[in-house]
Structure formats: structure tokens, C-alpha cells
Image (cartoon, rainbow, N blue to C red):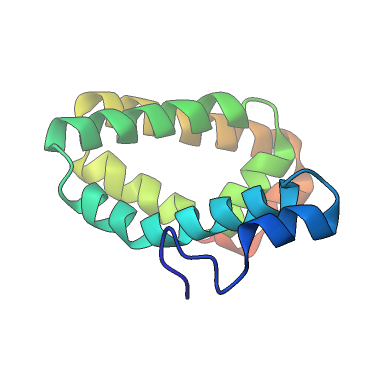
Length: 129
């Protein structure tokens, strides 16, 4: 794996000239290398994040899911088939007031959509709740 600033032995001028696309390939290589060099940093930064920031982000994610689920059977199905319902349960139990409220509203919307969608009601995950 190349580190930031390395080009895997490619001459930058030759890449731009040989492709005839004014350095588009070079930019692609450079961007890919940058993303690889930062991938491990994100996890550590997330672990060291301020607890109030984490709480705020959880509340905003739950709020976004609440609004996305309104009348949207496919999103409700995705949430129901994934482990998201389990995460909502944890958030309802341990989250801040905002997180609990937004999580509850998301679950209310999923339930409302399921009342109208027989296929969603029949999903195995939804039946276990």
C-alpha cells in the first residue's frame, strides 16, 4: 500500500501525458492514496470524540432516520432487515432524551408504514419484536 505522497513508482508527468487526459488519472491516484492514508485515523478520532458530540450525532442520525422512514416502505424494510432495530432498542434504553425521542419517532414511523405494508409486516425480524 502506498503512503501519502508516494506514487507507486509512476512518473507523474508520464501518467498525465500518456493518458492524454490532462492529469485526471494522476488526480485519481493521488485522491485514492490520500483516502487510504486517512482510513485508520477516522476510527481513532471517533473514539476520542467529545461525549456531547457523540450524543448530538446520535440524536441527529435518529432524527434523520425518523424523517427518512415517513411513508417509505423500502427504507423501513432496510432498517427492519438490518440490525438497526436492535440499535434503536439500545438507544431507547441508554440514550439522552433527544436520542430517545428521535428513536421512538423513527420506530413509530416504521410501525405506521408496516400497518399499511403486508410484506413489511411479514418480515421475520419485524415479527420477532
